[in-house]
Image 1 (tube, rainbow, N blue to C red):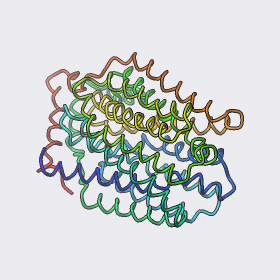
Image 2: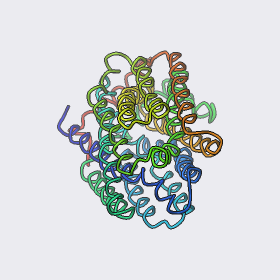
Image 3: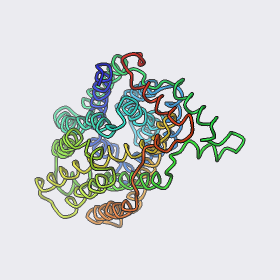
Image 4: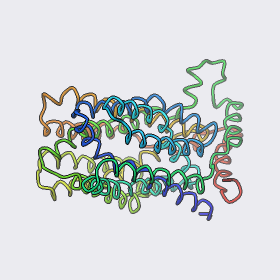
Length: 433
């Protein structure tokens, strides 16, 4: 790994650590804030749904913009909008204003994850993509460690405004780090040339074949595998967002936790997630994507099982540790599986579609819990989440595995995409800040 690529990945991981810390430190406080504004579980669910809905609509377009204009602009815009949104959360004096701000934030931050994942994929050797994505994700996992407990402690001692001010400062620092240390990794000319040559040799339909054929040409060749992977991502985010609003009120009102205790629980999850991503992120590069994804899903369900059957804080924490390790297994493997079957010039758009599908799960989850909250107890909601994840694991058995896109190309110019990728990896000479 060249020094410049090492600096870029470290800078990217640092940005994600700061951004996620700033966001997650206030996430457990949303329930407290809505209570102060006279709202409850249903309104908290609607606010989460507003963010997810706008993210769903914007993600594919943001991904396409990153493929066309580069990863760096999308990263910078998203980080700037996060800082602005946190200022809005500080100033909002009604639940309606809070919901509007979350919805607007969803539009302009939807490109962050596709862009940073695409950037990591641009830099990673083809046989270590899952490991590099896991390393980048580990930065975000630091946020799940430091953010919740810091936010809870600040809230318990100084209140909501102090926690938001610290969050805003960290978001601004994250933006400054990105400005200084995250260069552009996407050479539009090389990738566009690869796509043009594939179209010239007949690998992609001509524009005259119609919009739908052109749309299909931007998707992975193995469409059935892509659909299964998208469904897995949808189901995982649905399960978490389905229990999230009820979980926070359940922790405060039924289990009697303080904000610090809830923050510590989320930090425990983050510790397991970070350790897993650093130590286990490369497993799917060695053992194959499918078994690692399925194993991760089974372990991920532990948090819902723990909430459904235990009231002891230590036992629930142990369940969250297992779930964090499961998340560390399936997430890098799933993203790498999608990249394996994606055409080089459209990979960020394809990751944007993944984000859109995941966000749709984040819409449906809070919407359903808002409808069912009055008729179901907390344990029933947690058990439904268990069932969703385990059913998804069974559906994942139908996934046939992924074959790298470059292996599927044929013809005299079949290696063009791979050569373009090689040029992108020469970060010492090709990537400019």
